[in-house]
Structure formats: structure tokens, C-alpha cells
Image 1: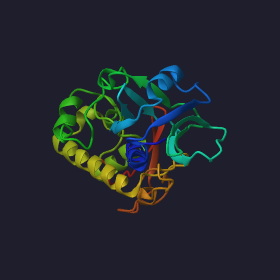
Image 2: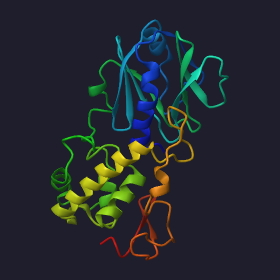
Image 3: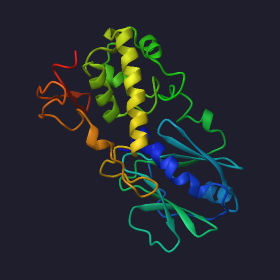
Length: 271
């Protein structure tokens, strides 16, 4: 599933190719994504218009035009890439936005859990308006995590993956940040100390920045907007390494279930 660094990598990859160019047509081959694609709204508002900016809010991409905004979530397997208009579409290529320079912004999504919506006010949209602070922004800190966690008996991993607490910290980065901060993923959020949350906030920020620099983790379904894969996956400490030796202490990494997700941790390094 594309996580925040993959979404940011996509933004940076497609941004120079889509801004301030006239949109000539919109093709919706399959409107059945997580929510129905509003084909009429997209065509009415985008054709003969252009994108003025592209921003990210959590894992959502927000493409601004003069008449409103396209709100995109990549779901579990979605990606956005740039093609020329001679590139034949394939089975899972659901949406094309065509520009007057013969380029195409193409949305591909094999599992169709993503979304491609139209809105006049993205900040007040039901998918956006209750999101927590950005992990790379000034409002995110250990103090914020500590304050929000008091008396909570949910596992700390679930806590930091709650988008109302902080946006964009998915399974991979939650596992990795908890390892680097020395915190067991199943520890109650309310029992994590202020100092531990300070360390955790720093590790979350550092991990995300490092992964963005390297182009994301590049899981099996994701290719960056510039068609180049990322390489951060090679540096993961615990995610996907159950049964292998810890890179720090050489203990065998263990896997436990938290909700419906597996979570790998080091029984010696994480307390």
C-alpha cells in the first residue's frame, strides 16, 4: 500500500508535468473505485481548464484548478504516472487526464480501493476535515503524542497509525519508528512516557524524510510518478523481517498480531 513517502514521491514526480497545461479531455474507463468517480463533474470542470497547484494532505493528493479540486487517494494499489498519448491503456488504467502537449496523467489501480473525487472545498471535505497534523509539519511533536495518548489503552502502534492523531504513518513506518525509539508496538499508548514520545516523534519525522529522499519503499504495487522505483526498502530494520536477526543486537525478531496486522519487533531492543 502506498504510504506517505510514496504519495509525496508521486507528487514530486508528476508536478512538473501537469501544472499550467490545458486539459483537453478526461477519460473514465471504470468509475467503480472505492467511491464512484464523478465523471460528469470532472469533465465539466476540467476540460479547457488547467491545474494550478498540487498539494498533499496525509495520503491524499489535492490537484487545484480554477473551478475546484480533484481529491485523489491511491488506496492499496493505485499509482499516477505520466504517459504520452500514443501509450495504449491496459486493463487497470481507469482514468486519463489528457493535456494539449499530448501527455497524459493516468490513474492505475488494480484493486480499485483508491478514490478520484471532485470537491469545491478540500479542507472541509469529510475525508480531510478530521485529519491530525502532518508528521513533517510544525504541529507534530512528542508533546502532541503524549497529550493525545493519556489514558488510552490501545496499542501504541495503532495509536500512531490513527489519522486523527497524526496523518500518514502507515504500517511500515510505524513498525520502523517504534523499533528505532525502542518501544514495543503492543505497549499501551497511555503508558508510553513523554521522553519516549519525543524520541518516537523524531524517528517518525526522520524516517519519512529519509524515505522521501530515496523515493519511498516501493512495495510490489507502486512505481513512482517518474517511473523510477525507490530504494528505501533495502534499509528496513524490522518490517518484513520476522524470524531474522536484529541488525542491532542479533536477537531473533518476532511477529505478533495487532488487530488484523502483523507487527515485527525485537524483544530485546524494544521495551
